[in-house]
Image 1: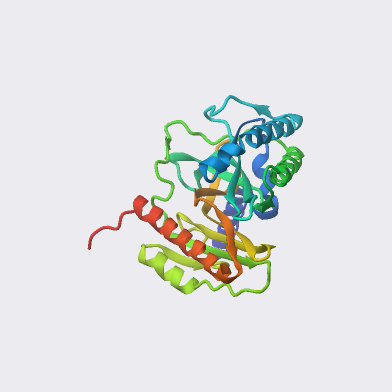
Image 2 (image 1 turned 135 degrees about the horizontal axis):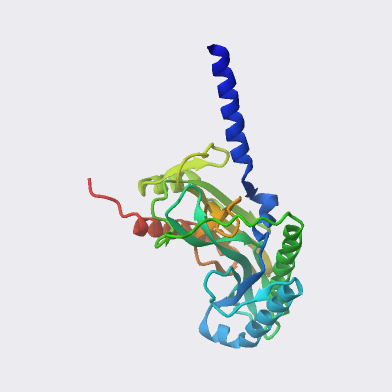
Length: 325
């Protein structure tokens, strides 16, 4: 009897293992897998900042759009009509801030947004970004937007390189069935916990950037979220994702320093286009903050990270109002 039990348990484990192998994880160095089978996309170039600054960059925006579309067409991607439903979106974003001595400080970002479903969710679908380029940031002089264009081109080059890598993979046509599913109205609704990843870099190497992780975790718990540290086991826990903040400071020229801050919440998702792929999808993103500070106020840029925590908490509480005791 015991022998049959052992054999049955072994077969069950093999079956579970085989089912697990059906999925491919497009995370970390395997992020390029989310681009397998992509043949068309909408392209959006977004500028953020003061209106007069944005107006002065209208020609740059037009050129950046043309650059992106040309690069994608050369890779065989069809550019669809703006906002075409059911088609992935490629977003190139730039936040610009005026420098008091002239010119602009900027940060650029690029992400690929696709239709997906939360792992284990059989009722709904949502648009999430599943591929992102590293933040590009720096300074450019008045009327010289070349550094910004080069930063966006670098992001596009990385995207096209991953497209080519994804094209080498065997093409699979196992779409996720979406009939009867509804669009998610609020992406943070029902989130139960977070793993936090806070990255603070002082490239000038001469300032102390203090951020109280314990205080942040206590704030998140007060909202009703469970908190886990990087490396903690969270598999099998429903609607647990990663809350991350990136903050960086660098010397821009005496006595000024340029900085940026970005924050997002990601969760494992299953692609509608290819249900075999599990990726980290960005469900919430804070508005990036960039600008300049003087030498005596460099430490104050950590306030941007603290503000990002507040913005995430407010967004979470709007989606999950605390019930009265």
